[in-house]
Image (cartoon, rainbow, N blue to C red; front, side):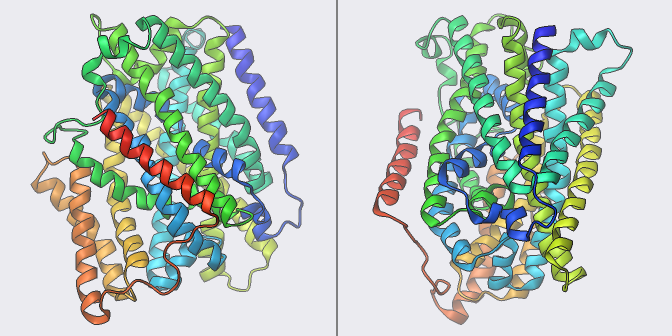
Length: 518
């Protein structure tokens, strides 16, 4: 236990040293602080983007879902490749040509200032509360699960322990992001990605070893080795994949938190290669996150877990020797920190550029904008911690509460509107701006109506219907007025022939995975 704790403390010291080393000078400019002077090359883009995407709840909650639903849970990982391909060849070329700092600036150019403002405000709320809060909770939950015996020597209750861990981890990542901006985020993400992948592979091989080998995945848990579950499945029906693909247009194509590295690319080729390599890494993430959960289902076939969210912690606490547990938890913390620092950086970018500079202080100097961005990092830490405390209350009030799927369902209230405006901006020529704004906001009411009137309808399926309905509402009058026309400018752009070949291979691999593991 002491060795494990020493490993984790060493990790925090090393990350803080890297963060201090990467700190920005006092007179840092806007592009240097928020976009690392647009100098990133593809390895940094790939690693930092996926490190941001993978959170502690991937290892805890998604492994728990894999324990129940099997390989079908991997749809949430590998289907991201669809969104990555669209982002690489359609979205990012436009953003780089426009030289935007935030995605909001693209929406303002295509759909007007009001739509852009609502998008920016919703993004800030979604990430500074919901995403930040749940990420902090899962990291604290994991740390308490591994070091429960050590913490039991104190008089603190479990919720109190989690609260302390939440404040510490949230403040820690906020400090080095505050000092260094995107440069500090990317440099620490590289180290943290290596740690989370190393820890993931260790737990993968340990789980497979105790199961009896790779062949036992099919012999013992063959019923869990399918990507496609029946269409009437409550949680992950195969028809819900369409909803996942639509949502990936937002997550990978117009998400400031994910795309900030691509916006900071040295050129289009570096951005496209970085994103496509990130697509390959999504297969790696599916392997080290989903398969251990399936393996544990086989190991504990005769004595199943009461709480699936304990899947990953059960593997760590029961099957790993001292020292290795510390390494695994370090990987979990690494996944948390790489997500937190990215959220802090992107929320500060949105607030300082889209709100402060655009509406509150149009004449602000670059130093004032950066200062405001730094202040917003501290505010985001507070809002995220407060939401994490709410999650503690919910989780411990009902331990069997399906937190991950509740989180997805709640966040989709906002994301559905995002997808509708993204499709309108990218695929329609000059859509009516007031109608776009109305439909974006009205989609929240439509989603609630679907959930109330058809509660048995899976949320991925519900999402698909609302998005299609919203887009049709905008598309029909737009096409009647302007005809079948795409927005002006190049729609699909490839920086080099080899990049196109890479993209085709990646697309075929996704199709092949669905055929092989149907």
